[in-house]
Amino acid sequence: MTGPNGGPAPSAPAPTEWRGTSLLESYVEANRDRYTPEALEAAMVAAGHDAEAAKAAIRRVDARRDAAPVVASARRTVYVAYGLTYLVLVMALLAAPSLYGAGVIAAGILTIVMGVALAISRYWLTRRGAPLGFGALVSLPLILLVIVGGACYATTLRSAVPV
Image (cartoon, rainbow, N blue to C red; front, side, top):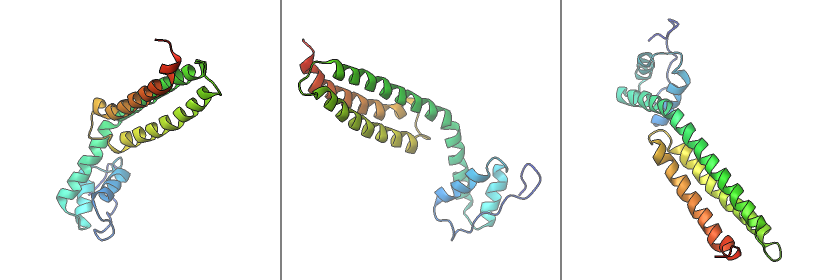
C-alpha cells in the first residue's frame, strides 16, 4: 500500500460513510495521481469495500480520463456550430424586411430557444461524455441545432425571402 513516494496510500472511507461506486470514484479521482491503482485498491479493500467495486471504480476513472480529449473536441465542435448558426440566423432575421420590429422579436425568441438547446447539449456532453465516441456525443446537440434552425427558417425567414 505505497504510493510513488514510498508513503502509504490514504485511508479510504468506511463503506458506511460512502454509499455507491460514484463516491469510490471520487476517492480514486482525488488520489489517482499520487498513488498506484494497486495501492488505492488495497486501501479501499482494507476499509471494507468490495474488491470488484474498487477495481470498477478505478476502471471508470481511467475511462473518463482517456475520453477527456474526445469530450473536449466534441464540446468545441458543438459550441462553434451553435455560435455560427446563431450569428447567421440573427443576421438574417435582422436584415429581413419586417413590420413592427418582428426581426428583433424573432431574434430574441431565437436567443432563448438556442440557449435552452445549448444547455441541453451541454448537459448531454457533460453527463454522457466518457463512454461515447465523438459522433455519438455531437449527434444530439446537432439534431437540436437543426430542429431549432429549421423551425426559425420555416416560421420567420421563409416568409421574408422570395422563392
